[in-house]
Amino acid sequence: MSEQSSQATRRVIAVANQKGGVGKTTTVINLATALAAAGHRVLVIDFDPQGNASTGFGIEPAARQRSSYDVLTGEHSLDEASMDTQVPNLRLVPATRDLVGAEVELLEGQRRDSRLRDALFDGAADAEFVLLDCPPSLGMLTVNALVAADEVLVPLQCEFLALEGLSHLLHTVDRIRRSRNPDLVIRGIVLTMFDRRNNLSEVVAQDVRANLGDLVFETAIPRNVRISEAPSHGLPVMLYDWRSAGAQAYIQLARELLGRYNRDLP
Picture (cartoon, rainbow, N blue to C red):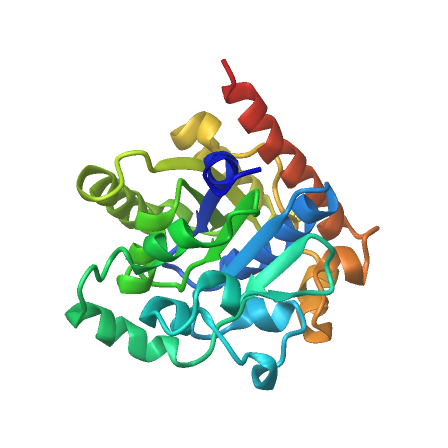
């Protein structure tokens, strides 16, 4: 397959929410793993200076010789910066703390909001899915991700006032769509940390579905101890305990995501 035809079938998904602690990185790690387990070639780009996605795949800081910062600055190509993980079919561009400085550097550089898109144009041609783990902010790193992405996936925690911060992200997506990336779409919203024992979770889920309808995935990610434990072992939850409720939820989310693409076919 040529690079052009391969990139035509590639889907670049920015997983974004400016609010921290909503399960964004957890969703990137485990959705990417589920897609890879289904036989798809996946690239994860850790775009968060905290580097939690890199840690969640077991990549220690000392092993991150090339990073997403190097890609942004042009020091290395996307393919040069990507590395294998213990998950078959899944590669990772790790993050380092250098990304903190990138926020400032990008404010003064040329094509400051298109650096990642340019890198994706030149690399990762064989990936079927590229998942971008955005930082919990709406700064230049997230803007770069939204300009580069085909679509946005939004993890939303089942908690009081869950919809409040979402409007800011949706406004940013709309602004990027109008000014820099007219084809950008919101693929869907994933409810996370859902606790069936807590009436509030059910109330929030109903509220979100009433307001956003089909944008909300049917699959909700439960609050699950195995999901919480897995990153400390440097493993996606599917490798840590594939039988757990958390692992099964992400497998189902991957199925539902793939089903949405099939639904969109003419």
